[in-house]
Length: 176
Image 1 (tube, rainbow, N blue to C red):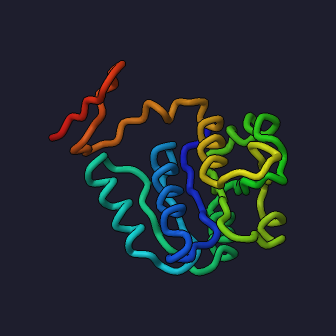
Image 2 (cartoon, rainbow, N blue to C red):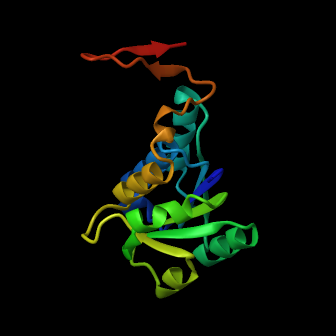
């Protein structure tokens, strides 16, 4: 059973990728990742977005920036993580999820730019959620949900100042 999930965002260019990388971080957090690591130029606005989210909505995944995807993958392999690269060229998630679910620690790699061949070779699994072009955010959400069999959807985030109370119509927000 997976106990720790790190998402590695392969590539970030602040001017071009701010919104998508922010959404990667927020979706990773909401879908149960423990941490997001971004390879690319440090972007304080993304750090601020994630930190604000964690302060308001409860403690979830944080974000850190690094300059070498190769070093980060190697680092996690040495720590016993199994690496899963999400790509439309991989094996279908429905054929791999059961085997992957058995590992304790996962490094989930998602791209933003053209991914080098070595990433495909270094990954323990190359997994697709569809064989059609799609967003890395969608791939990550589908993969994390299938991996955790929907259990992450009920996760409680400690220390939340804001919470949602589900209602059939309208919206109800609780603030502390």
